[in-house]
Length: 220
Image (cartoon, rainbow, N blue to C red):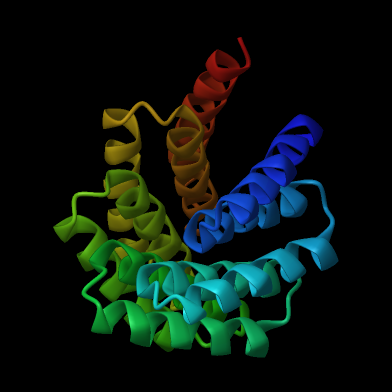
């Protein structure tokens, strides 16, 4: 990761010298993501705000939407949910205006996560369902599976276990199709947790064993 940071700092410098503000903004955005992975939240936020400002100045609406969403992601990780939500809502409005359906799907899903964290499960469900539908339409199967898994968690909180099982099974099948072993293992584990809650311990054990088997495969 440190090597990536060095390369991106050089890329930012080169793009600036070339007079390419959009390329510079993109490199700064990637640098912000790298700082996040390094745990340097202050530098990450500074980068995302710089990228946002440059993209706004150059009327890069798709980039602006991405930057707003990225800033929301950072505040979500920091558990500042009101600030995260404000950035997500701005991103959602813009992405809808420019017909960025895949970006809209991601932001809708993120808003659903915010409401889940806030304990507002009906709102989490509504935004999550909209995100799922858009991921499905644009054939982003990774996003689709992740959004389905999130909805499973929401339906557990809403005490609608049958729907939760339905969504967990759907995402499990998609994870298997796209060879996302970690996602598949996680979905199986969630099913195990749900069947423990329902008192069906034999079924729960079966799901746990399948999850463990896949986890061991990934570890190998």
